[in-house]
Length: 55
Image (cartoon, rainbow, N blue to C red):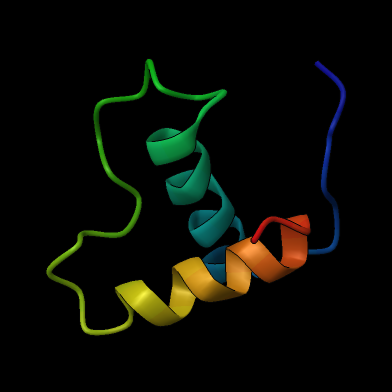
């Protein structure tokens, strides 16, 4: 495998992973990286969308 993103913190990587779990291409992963019950969930997903250039 070839890395897609590098030089990320653990929480940044988890944010991106959670975004991909919910929006593809990683829909096969059934275990959330960040729970929707986590108080920082919305903030993490907003960061991931900005980082990935998604609205």
